[in-house]
Figure 1 (spheres, rainbow, N blue to C red):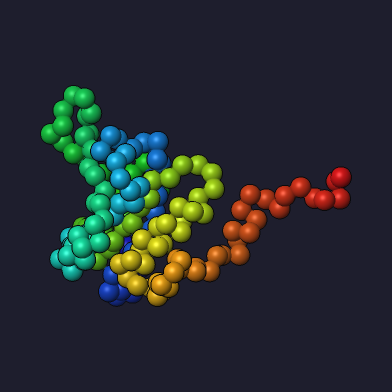
Figure 2 (tube, one colour; figure 1 turned 90 degrees about the vertical axis):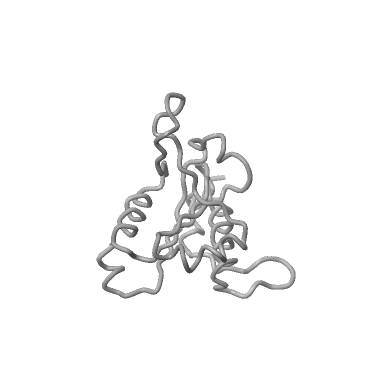
Length: 155
């Protein structure tokens, strides 16, 4: 993936991801469930805007909680390849932003909209209407996210 991003010559890449809500530590329980990470090559460009928006960076947690707080590490449980891809992009000097939301099992459609609206605040992908929220197109695959329901002919 990293070599493809590099060979494509993107100005920046954005990874939308999530992390298990039940793994949050005390400092992550306060405020918004949305977090971000920026690679060093994107930090210079995007940091002022991110600060202006009041976003919270993904906190590093103690590698040995309760024993020693000296060693901090990035921990994204349930994030799949997010941490590895972010780390590789940092090493390869690729401009990447990672946007995360802490979420629980179940219907995560509202979480997906919250995450993409958060992204839209930064990149202005769609114009925000004066009233209401941005109307995103829902993927057709979401229609049967929890199955097709009980067939009415059963009753």
